[in-house]
Image (cartoon, rainbow, N blue to C red; front, side):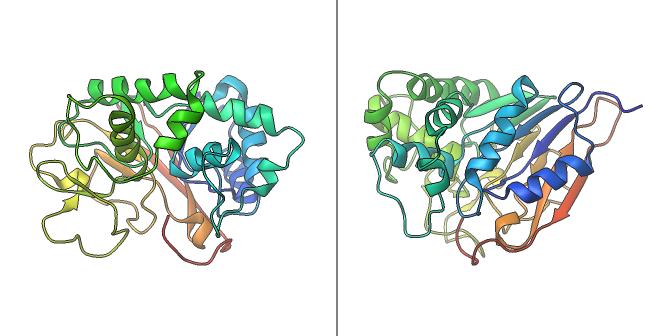
Length: 280
């Protein structure tokens, strides 16, 4: 008989068919197992509303992180942002159960600690500890669930400030936290973030966030998504990269988190291409 398991799933991006098939393949049982999807539940794929309904139906067995596309859905839904040319969010925006779907999304997390792992959508700035990351994520979660949602979403977009400072306050502080947790790929040694490059060689003066020397979380295990061109990081036991580009014709990945004396188990389901290749 299967024992209780914690599964992590990478970016789904509206690909409900592959999500259902992957849950069947791992024999996921909401009465026995737990699931965390590492953000970007919606957009680019064909069935964002179905993804949200499927995850909502799992109740307390499923927890999700908010990625950049999920925040974009919330911003678009409340009129803080116009839909993008490549968005595929109309099935949510026009759904009869739109409001329950959006309210459920607002209750999800910006970061979690589970199974001995720090879980984020994109990355962690080099100066942040695990405790810092969870605390700062909590600041954003509080605003997402509160009465100032519209103001936050309206001010959320932009690349500046480009680095973290404990002196930041208000919209600028929240923007840096959101950018790090949902958009980060490359940064400099002193923590300046770079958002123009999504793949290929790092731009001069920058490196993948997880390769910054002296990163405060270098001894912690971190699972993340967002970077579909990165692939599974072989030989990097503490870095679990789970966006395998399902929506671009790659695969949807699930990681069964092993206990203290067990190895992690990676399961990947090949996916038909649901969107033309492009940036995440």
